Amino acid sequence: MTVDSQPSVLIGAVVRVLRDLAIHPLALRIDDGGASVLATMQARALRRRSRGPYTEDNLPPEATEMIDWLGLRLSVRREPVDVMIEGGGQWPRLLVELPATRVTVRYVVPEDAPPGYQPEPNNVTLAGDVNIALEFLATSLRALGGRLRGEPPITLTLSYPDDPNYERNVAHLPEEFRQLIPPVVADLAVDRSRFSRKQRAAHDEALRAAAYDDQPLEPAGGWLTTRLGSARLRLSS
Image (tube, rainbow, N blue to C red; front, side):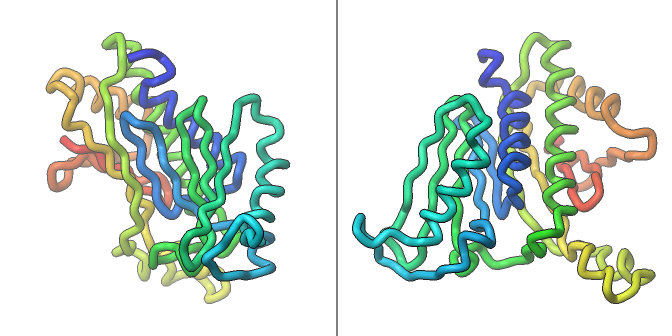
């Protein structure tokens, strides 16, 4: 495995894309083939709405507005960017590929997004905690790779189950602040099934070394679990 293909490098590239493009990831998958992100188009791109199917002479204004916005946001990145409008269905989609870093972002309109909670545009708490959890994981993998001369492969998926502690978390808050607390957990599940027993034990040690003093890592149901704000990182045992 080359340095550029190691999981920590790919995770770092994902975090940079999420931050550069101000993305709240609706879904995320990271594996040997790269990283794929699902996101909703920016609010400015949704001021003019349309429905497909589309043609080359009738492109969706949502997608063309997103392309203009992305051109500004990505102009500082020194890597090629491939953009393709997917207009064969009822709703427009926009596919953004960054082949050098192996990250793909697919933008959809709200009607085409998977069901579930989405924060208000200016509420970045959940997306910020996802980034923190990803950086924590990348730090532990780099430490593991330095110790064992390489990082073993992982598969990571992101979902948003309901937070069982939500009512308790907001019980003491005024009503106007409750909307800032997400009712879901950003659950990042990491499959370590291709780790050897030695690699898994060394990674557990690296995770504990990277954790904050008051950040517990607890075994639960076959997973090693830790919370970072609204994000939960789970690693298969």
